[in-house]
Amino acid sequence: MADVSETGKIGWIDITVDDAEGLKDFYAKVTGWKPQSVDMGEYADYNMTMPADGTPAAGICHARGSNDAMPRQWLIYIVVVDAEKSADACIANGGKVLVGPKPMDGGKIAVIEDPSGAVAALYQAP
Image 1: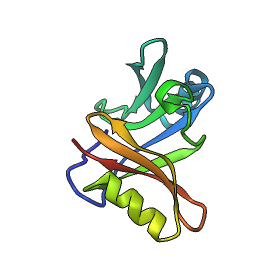
Image 2 (image 1 turned 135 degrees about the vertical axis):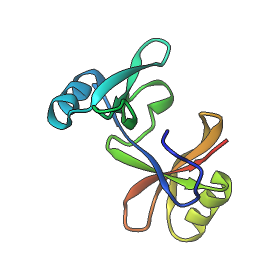
Image 3 (image 1 turned 30 degrees about the vertical axis):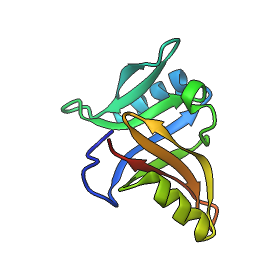
Image 4 (image 1 turned 120 degrees about the vertical axis):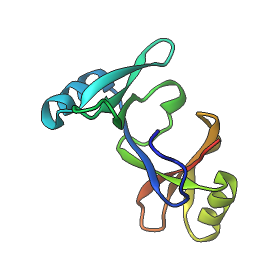
């Protein structure tokens, strides 16, 4: 995850797909990102890093395990103070909660759909 110290900032972006192995190679060739394996137990997801300095730029994840219910698309992660309250506000304002809120990386995540049908994740840092 990138810098998650500022509420409202887009702290990360990733994509969940059936074949992360193949897609990481596609983006490496198209963008110059360098894949860095992230051990998920029985398989690996990937941080795609900047070619110049290895800074994480995005994630490419398999649609299994903890990511099984994630939408198959690029997904931004917006930093929030409280994932539970933000998820409740989403529902109260005409949106839907698709995943969570649930624990992630010591914090919490909720995947929401706004009233227009667009999907984003809300991330509460630890």
